[in-house]
Image (cartoon, rainbow, N blue to C red; front, side, top):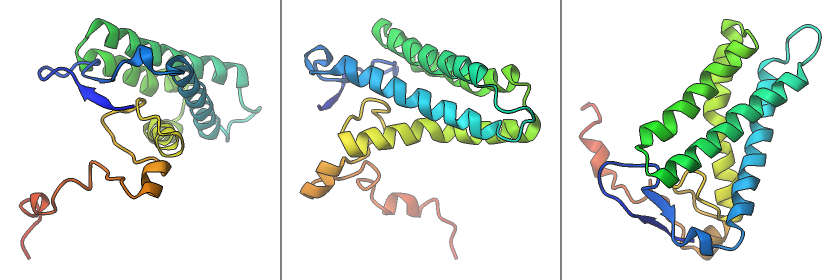
Length: 176
């Protein structure tokens, strides 16, 4: 599936969409598969963050909070993309919910909050890398191009970072 830039300015949620998403077999399966994987990763991140709590982990609350931020965030982004909302309106509310709801819902300590913020920042990237690399499904974070295993094996993989010439970084490096 190829990604196509359909709008120039301003960047909206639907600026990067798969060509003919409705014609892609299994696109709904992909969406719900990514949602399920995200639920597992976010639930694991919450469990890891709260692992030192006395009395055991509050599994029902972990499930409810993880479902609220993952399912709510993914449907918010999908609806925003359908409506052509600016990217800030598609990305900031789910991001704010991800960062703020768990510390408030679990009354996290400063240490737990710092751990949660770090794990929350990594969780989406982990899901994207796994789906992109192993299955070639790149629509979770379409702006970040991760070559698939098939592309690497065929020798045709080129990451978007590899396309940036090193000379473009030279001006920002301090002179020795």
